Amino acid sequence: MSTVRLTAAQAMVRYLAAQMTEDGERFIDGVWAIFGHGNVAGLGEALEKAGNALPTWRGQNEQTMAHTAIAYTKAKKRTRAMAVTTSIGPGATNMVTAAALAHVNRLPVLLIPGDVFANRAPDPVLQQVEDFTDGTVSANDCFRPVSRYFDRISRPEHLLTALPRAFRVMTDPADCGPVTLAFCQDTQAEAYDYPESFFEPTVWRIRRPEPDRRDIEEVAALIRSAKKPVLVCGGGVVYSQAEDTLADFATRHGIPVIETQAGKSALAQSHPMNFGAAGVDGAACANELAEHSDLVIGVGTRFQDFTTGSWALFKETDRKLVSINVQGFDALKHGSVGVVGDAKVALEKLSEALGTHKSSAFDPQSRLDWLAKVDAHCSARTGVPEGYLPLDAEVIGAVQRTATDKTIAMCAAGTMPGALKLLWRAPQAGYHMEYGYSCMGYEIAGAMGVKLANPDRDVVCFVGDGSYMMANSELATAVMRRVPFTVVLTDNRGYGCINRLQAGSGGAPFNNLYADCNVEAQPDIDFVAHAASMGAQAVKAKDIADLEARILEARDRPIPTVIVIDTDPMHGPGEAGGGHWWDVAVPEVGTTVELKRARASYEENRTHQNLVN
Image (cartoon, rainbow, N blue to C red; front, side, top):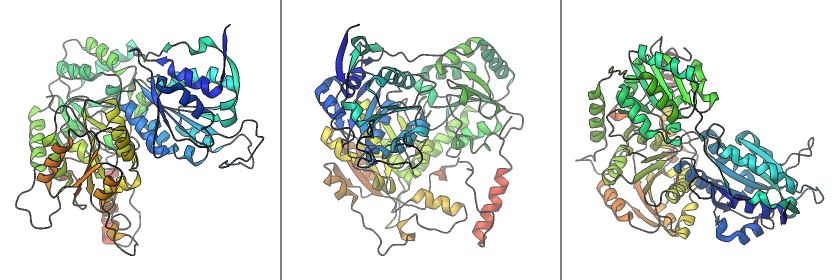
């Protein structure tokens, strides 16, 4: 057997560079890195020598550069991924939030935090976490519950098994998620005679597991007997690249489609079978379908509480639930009839089993009526008084009127995710929302990842002032790398979304808007100056008309543009109708009239929860 002597770090880098997609591209597009004493000498040397064979990019924060990597793979529909390496200690634990985000969203990313010395000679090293009862523990054990696969590389030959396992997980549509390889820093520098065959190019196929024939037959029988079936489109439709298959299935068999956050834009909003968003942030026409449906057919969805209205949305007493999902864990939730398999294959086989069967138990006009209300609600207000602050819906309308079929709207947390799901009229593949973890601070880094994955698309990032304040530093990275996108920064002077939730739950305004915080002086943050200081083009829009003009100006710039606009913190997106109850526990006892009223409403809504068949 022919061998080559390499350090473990050199071997890892060479292996990563040789793992290919079916399209002949590297599966790991490159490595985001912030170096420290846990990875600079080992992995740093190996990555520098690799050059363009496996490019390295520097971020500003470990969490946000991981967010960029995650947004990239989400935008690539999980067909490619990125790696992220950090030092030991705080650099590593900064990534735990990003790992959790990838875990919840079932997205592949390779995390390579530096770790302690395997030989323990210099223990405790700088930044080492010591467990008084377990000598094997390091800070990187924090990654275990938020990784699909976790391994600690404490000997060079561990790579021979750990790396293939890592790629199996990242390319498995059912087990897909973050992989953490905690890399002991002395092991990175250790040499070993690796088999040359280990570094031969390998093609990783993303398989399409076929469903069981009996499950298909059972679901086909349920559809034939159903009076009012509805399809719930989840992110699995996108990852399976089953968008056209779903459209054909819905049209051929007369079953309307409603959307989750991850599934939105699998069908263009203009498609006649797309009735829009479902659930808490749902359209009136979509929620009406869901409430009266006797057969709810989920396709690639986790049935998150926002989609199901905390399981109070599907009100028919005898309704049946079907879940088509590549992961059995998701396919069998809440007593559903599960079809375990790839979404595209399952829909094709189900359509074949149904033959010419077609339902027609829905009102196509309700969809058109809803869209007309959306257009009216998102239009710019006229005759407004001096000092008027626009609603988030008006901001969305301004961006919508400037959008093209190449526009991708993206967001993650605050008011805008619900508003966009409800109101944004997306073209196919024109929506990117991280709402599995709804992580504040994802937006700027995520926009860069989306643009890197889709360089020919127009990426518009919606972010509130609260999320912007949490994590904005990758704006500087985007400027340095010349990655252009447009940031629409809505400044409502605090956490407006949670302030409204607080009030709706019977609470007094407290610690959300700056006006209700325990501070000595109200902040006056100049977001334009801040963004400009990192090299971005930055401007403040005077009003909605000015916002439209600024968005059009930004489209052809080679660097990011940040457009700030002041908005009303007191009103959400629901004035156009739609929406649904969400189970947020209200205190059982309290002294205020508002709290007692909120608790009574809460108890009434809980009676409508239809948890299992």
